Length: 345
Image (cartoon, rainbow, N blue to C red; front, top):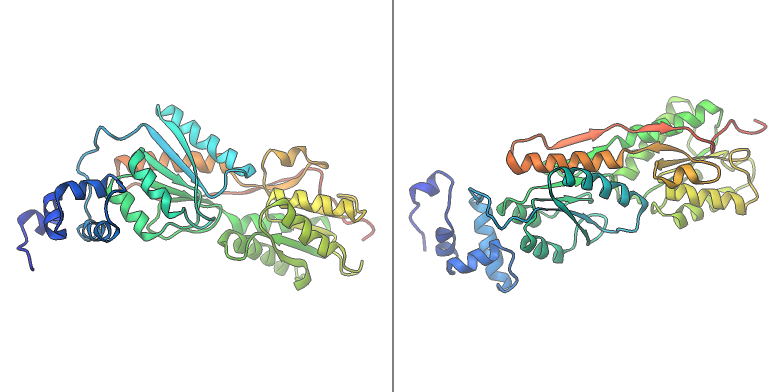
């Protein structure tokens, strides 16, 4: 049955009563959907969500139920760079009299479906997500309830309509490789991250660009994808260091500091000294990099600043939906003790 459009609908606005009428449910049911209540049947919830999305429903005012919380969501909390991100969010939250909620959910690409129910019930001031993407339905649910969100994307480049803070991954791969080339290395290997993450591919592209500009070939046997963890770095490095001496790399660029730690251990097991026999460059500049033996040359990714900027963007979006929604921060090379000119070459 077609319903006559009212004046406020013609202006693009819709009331909860109109949503309820169109969906054939009670106003209280619409309210439950808006509040993230779980006691609504799936098909009914979907129908109400579609109507809210179609009419771009937004709350005209914030309710007093908004909690003084900023939520940060990871797919894993046991990574070294997670601590840097948490500290950055906490710095801004504290200055704005807010507490921080930590949530672990989903995969490295997006939070799990169970997360959205909880956040709608908590009703935080906003959400910082450490993922490369966000499902369209989740975006609409957050927007319909005026919960701003920002993605911190060391993992990739999110959709254009998603507010995000990232870093210059291609340039990071470029400067790391240039440093090794300038030291005199010609057989340089790389262990980047997973092949389905844009940051991994961007760092690899930066590596390839530096090699190409120097007129150096990239040996397929010296390009490996890892998982950003120690074991992945160890396994890939062990494979490359087992090559005949004429093919073995004199330097390795690891796509994370954790992978670089795996490289250091693989070199030790192979009886190689760093940097005398093998130079190693990491990525991220987490605290352990300066305390490894030798201290790790690495690409500084400004993780804490990324989190601070993301949280500040979140608070700006909370007050002004037209605020700037994309920021990319520079990366830089930190030279320590794990790189040197190739020995005997």
